[in-house]
Image (cartoon, rainbow, N blue to C red; front, side, top):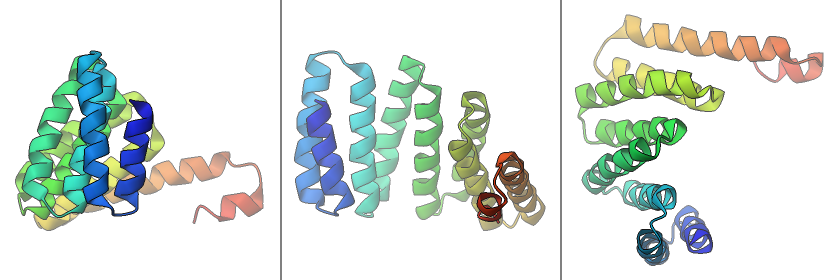
Length: 168
């Protein structure tokens, strides 16, 4: 199952979407047959990303909604936060700005809870984008400033002055 998923991902990244989907579909069938819920969630996310990459944003949104439920069922907080960020991005592409903001708002506490800095920064970035799209400039600025604080905290922990300079 993992090999099929990886082959699907390689083809997706190479923009060979017609080749990616069959690998994902086979991995999905096998993960369902073997009741591998976490793998099923991961494969569903891969399918949604293909739809997203193809510009099939409505299909991606539907897939992300399904995918979110799988991550909730498995208790995978990081998976939930990541999928909510993808889901919100697809909503923004569809012009559903308020819905996207609500989704990013759901992702924010999960991103903080899991403690993954990259996901937290992604969520703050997406919150800023959604607020900007709605004309909420102060809220966008606040999210951006929160991101900068996190990056500066990371930079302060880097021992080497040369490496520290790379952060800004």
